Image (cartoon, rainbow, N blue to C red; front, side):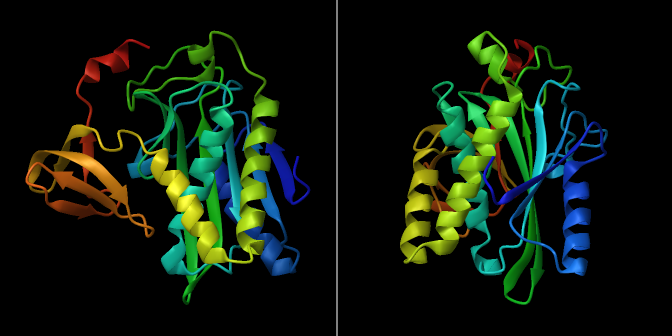
Length: 264
């Protein structure tokens, strides 16, 4: 694994994000924090997803881990770059296993119309910069059956028809993220590097340019995903040609056939 990554493994915990943050704060208090702290577990008793959802994961079958960083060089206004970085890194790794890997805004990883991975990012902001970041990841690897039908889960083994080496996949994912993170922090032209990452993120967006139904506070409407701003705002173009702008949790994509959730 990448030399800047320091790993702690727990057989069971409530949430790797909680443990990662606690350990990071302890390291900071001792003045010993450096590199990237990786917390992994075989089972979470209180795994969290976006929008307050729980994350279903069978014991010992999937990847459940958190990466803690101190990205003090990154301004709070630029925090979406870390969302793009981990999303692109996951897509790059998973695309080596199968095609059809996309990013459902802002940072769910999809295989076609099914959710393969979820990411929960938590920032602590101090002044104008990010003091610390915890990136929690749940990646469905070898789970064969899901009790929940939300949100249309699938595992890599279901896609490929065979089990996958979880440790190898974890190493590939963390090493790819760490390499990109290091490149970002050391790039001679940070603006150019971030623009390149943003373009890569954009090309990987789920249903980019495809008409679909969405729902916001005013109701349901048809639109295409036009682009995502560098600050993370989603831009949808409706049937009247108007570009609508949304922050996270302000709009919902409506799946055309919810019944497929029960077909896995």
